[in-house]
Amino acid sequence: MSNRTKVAIGGVVVGLILLHWIPLWLFFLIIVGIPVAGYLALDSSQRRRLRRAGRRQIGR
Image (cartoon, rainbow, N blue to C red):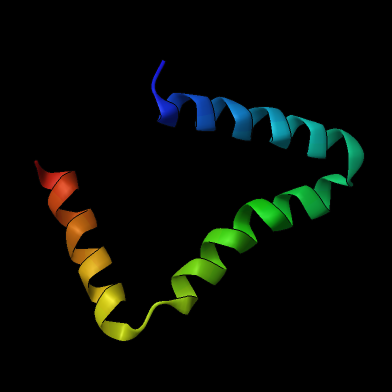
């Protein structure tokens, strides 16, 4: 099993534990808020590069 698989499984387990302990609305706020905060932390050139890479992968 690769390290990425172990991290993914660990993330799912932590997510299920958090879902049990915190309210549903707070769980969804965390799920959406972390990627949005990460995207907003990028500067404009990094955002452009990310959008370009995303488009390239869609069209394969």
